[in-house]
Image 1 (cartoon, rainbow, N blue to C red):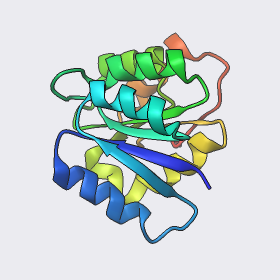
Image 2: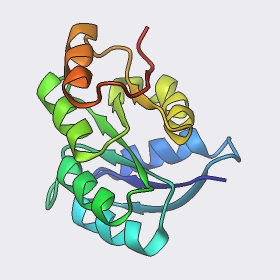
Image 3: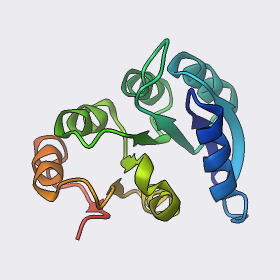
Image 4: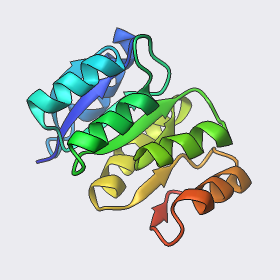
Length: 151
């Protein structure tokens, strides 16, 4: 059963992600953190299979934390949650080592799909991300990788 660490500076988002995962016994919530620095520390302590993390947080943002987590735990997959539909952030996220990029507006419908695809060694981008931006960003970084979630 894959373990999941949830990282967001807003407790209600962490509770929301937890409530999405709880009905599905295939996912085990192993911990929570409220900023990127704490995420790095918890990732070292808990060794989660997946980190579901906000992009914009105080102390250390999700992209910088992703980069650090991937350096010390390359087997850990990271899915970033964000309000930002930005080609630049998407590119930076994948360059840092993220395997998923999910808009917070899509979390209810897309998080479980993203988790399944990422644990299957795929990559995931919310379908509401502009297709041209997603394709261009992914082409810059992951030429030849398996990208799912886009039609």
